[in-house]
Image (cartoon, rainbow, N blue to C red; front, side, top):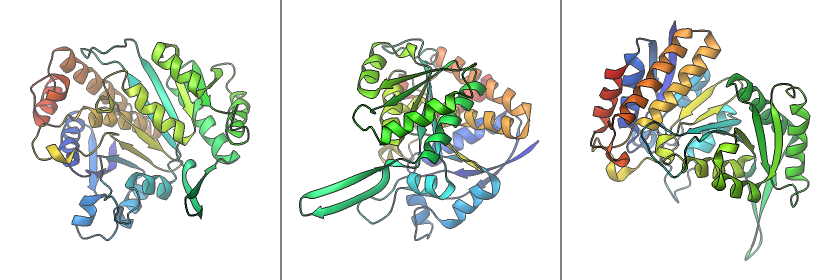
Length: 340
């Protein structure tokens, strides 16, 4: 099948890692037509007055899927976050971060295999802040039944599709009885439709963090509201080597954006030393999504081939410098391609 994908290279090391990921995906033999659009500083440098041009949003809406590198939002210049603007503009309500140990990468933890599902549109990150008077500021946590039900249903459906067995909701409903209380109420009720296939549990988030660092293997799928999910997803990434070796995706009803969650690292941009693994892994997530959306099993097969190839590279010590190796960005991509 022929697939159309929007490519948003991003800033800093973004174009380099995007090119590497693109090369690996193309080497599988899949027919992918790429439509490149800009966001972040790259968009401003190309003449746009916005860090997220309207044509980029429209392209993702038209084609339904995008692969995105890291983008930079200028600090203190009145621009809103690229990622926040993408989520709002495309209603990307479900953020997913799969985290697992990789072959050959030794960390303090082993057998980690957890998926963090994060509500992506409201909570404290809704950005509702007010100055009451000088020296007093409020920040409102927005929680709606519609969004809470939607993300809970998504988490259970995702768990079933990925053959997972348990969803754990992290919350603070013992203190925030109304907001977090509504979130877990919706999760409980949505679970009733999945009770035969998915185990369900709730955990107060401070105790959950303690349990995570004690033994992350007891968790399977973690469901969080927006702010908690932002923190927890980076925390669990640290168990397996950091956000440089974890993929990410943002799902909506009509389109989805797959993105590396690390930064743009402008200090090493253009040096061909950045690790493209996170975006390659993100590309694997994208292929599985395309297989589900279109029924093209070649995408699923290609996803498995890429996963096996980069795993073999890591196990053999073929890595970039951040992982203790000596390969450049392009050399690592070529090593993966060679093993396909």
